[in-house]
Length: 263
Image (cartoon, rainbow, N blue to C red; front, side, top):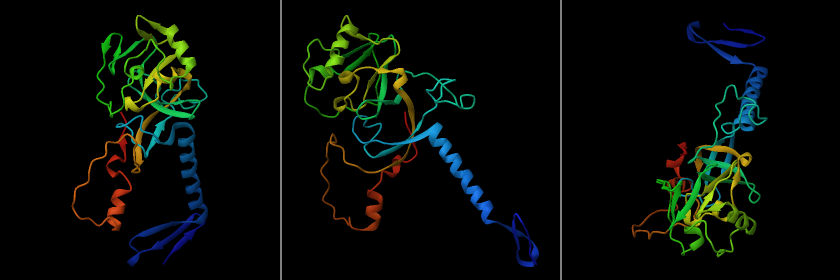
């Protein structure tokens, strides 16, 4: 025996001991719409996916990593970008944060905050000093690269690198005091973790606070993609079966990076 009403159907099990609820088509469609609305809200106001296309943040972020970023954390209460400030926590940008920010070309970049307003920044033989103190940087990757006086000793006194933005070079001279760059109010000094292969604040300048829009949270997927800065290791001489499906499945993604929290 079975019973039904306008909201769904009930189907009896054996001996009538249990019932299975089957939603109607309108109910199922309404549930689907609710899921879509929640997903769109999260993407519009809270989370946003990004793909890492370059090597500048290795080994923290690899080419082929897909990120979810928090767009609310750096949006102060009252900001149009943070309509949920009463629910979602806000804090200001801190030294050591990895941040996503607007940049003329490409439109978004991701780097690590090294200097905040008021900091005195100096790089000596590749070692970063903040307020005359060397900082611990366990995240830095020092891939082999040709010597570069401007890159490894900052701020430089001589314009030696064609990759340096001329406008930034002139501004840098005004902000330099006693061989150190003084970060002005409302500005941030950012570097890539792949320190020898990153175009960052050393080359194009400071990042204004209003340009910083998000903080990466987690790697939700990672495709294996070659990096031009990798030091290639010779393969061993064991015979393999690269054509097998299992080998292709294991090889196209970095499974161990999925759902890795970003620090």
